Amino acid sequence: MDAAFTEEQDEIRRTLRTLLRERCGPDEVKAAVQTAPGYDEVLWRQLARTLGLPGLALASAYGGVGCGVTELALACEETGRVLLPSPLLATAVFATPLVAAVGTEAQRAELLPRIAEGALTAALAVPGRALPEALGLVGARDGAWAGGGRAGGVQARPDSGGDAGWRLYGQVEQVLGGHSAELLLVAARAGGYTRGRTLLFLVPAQADGLVRTRLTALDATRPQARIELRNVPAELLGADDGGSGDGVSEALAAVGTAAAAVLAAEAVGAADAALARTVGYVRAREQFGRPIGSFQAVKHRLADVYVAVQAARSAAYYAAWAAAQGGAEGTGAAQGGAEGTEAAVAGGLALAQALEAQRMAAAEAVQLHGGIGFTWEHEAHLYFKRAASDELLFGPAHRLRARAAEREGLFGTADRAPYGGRDGRGGNDGYGGHSRHDGPDRRDGRDGRDGRDGRDGRDGRDGRDGRDGRDGRDGRDGRDGRDGPRKAVTV
Image (cartoon, rainbow, N blue to C red; front, top):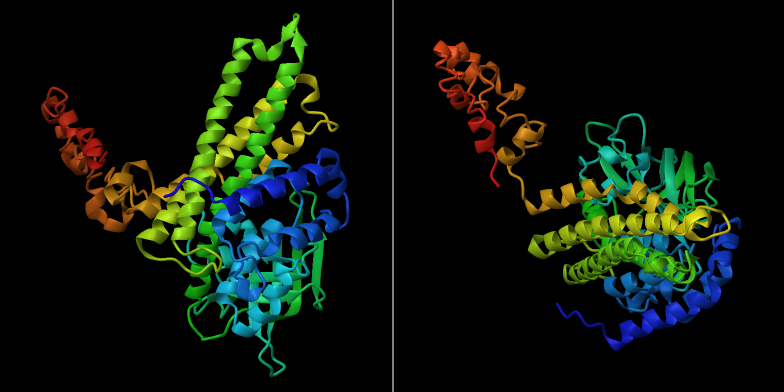
């Protein structure tokens, strides 16, 4: 990995930072979120025209700039720094790679050039508030996040009119940018429960039966919407080969790998800005005749934040590099093998670390700004809301790390057994445990409490065999069940 950025990458960062500093201060952000679309449309068109921001990671064949995940991550670090309200995340990070990866050539030729020039915005609608599960950021069962064919989610059926169209019925909550996007990519379940498969559909904003309602969100800079689909006509994204829909799941997972790196960089930008504002304040604010930043307790707290932000930045840059190397660049194509796994693990861990750094920086900003830190007039609350909202939307951090550990294969069946779950899903099966899947023989012992071997005469305590079972608490050799569970764990 070459840790140095190219001249072009530095220029992207510098140009975007200069433009946003001029056009996107705290007052402009507060004014933009109050508008109907939830962002400054004039600024968005300017970003599209001067920097090609919507098509930054899109192939030049479709009118994009032809860069990749790394450049998009650098751009989002700058937009995160000012908490820019825009369709960038929903359009360029989630929707565009899916159109490029799954869509037919005709769909790409029609949609991608319009997205690249900023004339078309898009949003990804995933049922059940399950965006991180759909993108593979946290663990999920196949199809469960899409409704699984049961009640709930969005259901798709072929149009009875005889043409090749589809009809969608259902409701989706918390669609990022869904109230203003001109095109919706809706994940829906087709084929019912027994032969169900998850597919992606294109729904224009003017479709009959489509109802979109902007929700009151914790973070107003990330507007969200409720999407109601009432027998809405839709176009299938890609060709219907009658398969299982695994291609859609793989494309979503590939998009999730790149999105994790981009989201991590965006969170780092917000955390760095919150830290910089706090440092500036403690240098100017005086108490007892001296700046409060000169007090050792304040220095220590800000030093901890600085370390966390720098570590998160390094992790985010590495995740972006790994995503580009693993094939997520530009097209969002499915990844496989060691490179794809490395990129997915790096993205999940980087996002977890960045979310924690962002929360830490925002909390310290509110605390160290004192009485003004939580007022509407000050911008500290904007960073705090962004930190809390991001963890709810894309986390939490412990689930991101658990998914990364699962991908890496850190915990085998026996390793996870003592901590709950069954048969390698964390199963009590190594606490020997009650694996109810293993029949009465298992109950015959809490077999992993090796000891207690089966409650078999409590032949493991050694049956209290003359308390010889406790055999010098050798029943703790029996109960070496302590020897039992502890030996089941490989460290």
